[in-house]
Length: 66
Image 1 (tube, rainbow, N blue to C red):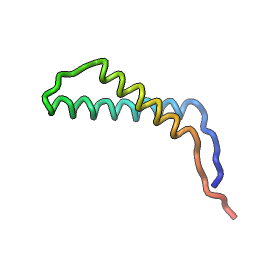
Image 2: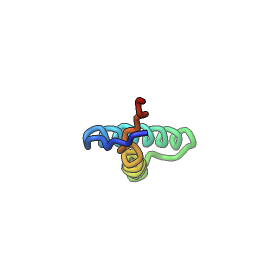
Image 3: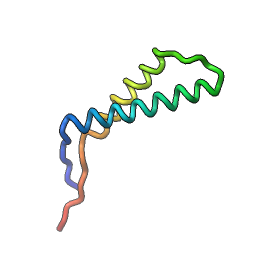
Image 4: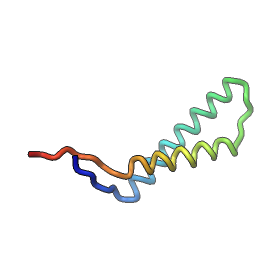
């Protein structure tokens, strides 16, 4: 498999979308469990999950065509 580094724009977009979806899911999960909404917890989930997802998707893997 060939490893190709992606441009910065798709990496940032991937991180923002994944971080936002995870933070919304965790806020909804906390709401249904009776916790109050915390903006600090929301931002923590958004930033750290988005950052680690952006790092994990910084390369594009393609199969070699023989």
